[in-house]
Image (cartoon, rainbow over all chains, first blue to last red; front, side):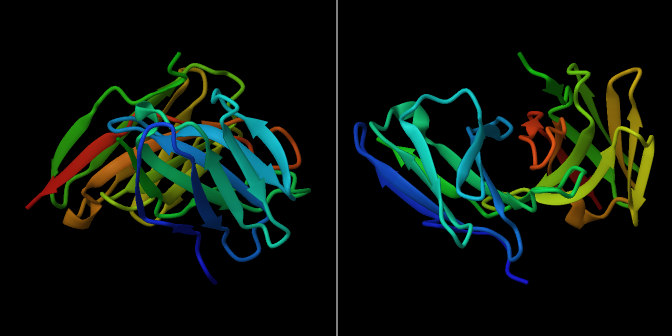
Length: 116
Length: 115
């Protein structure tokens, strides 16, 4: 069973640029959630994708957008990068659907983004 | 508004003793709680979870206790081992039906297990 993978591991961008982060979900999982973790803080929910549709969004501006593909992998896009976007970006996958109970989310190793 | 709070930023415990990590929450809609462990430069690793219909869940050395009336949960690690040294995050969610709900995390407690 393959776990959650993310690419790239590290990235340096300058203010105003755009960035795309990628995530491959764990085998058998159809739901991907993205989180931002600033230094010294817990992860903050950005949004979730279920079967290629956005399924919930946290308190992040529209310049944070995403996609989920038919194979359930996902992308997080951030436009017009700001210095405060520097953080660890985490992807988590889970099996959503008609299970009728809470599903545990499993995290990837993260992408560390530095905006200069 | 911090809905999940871990008031102890750090904890030091001797090897072999019990580690107790605490977490408080304010949102009464939360019905599923999880603990994750995080090493530097890695993503959070799932440890153990508990549904609000239970008050205790055990998995090997790890036990989570939930006190719904106090909106408090704790993670007990017995016996503590040096490899347990990491940052521990408490997370909570409310079941929205159909798909996994977002997790709300605390700020973490750094556990150091000393020899």
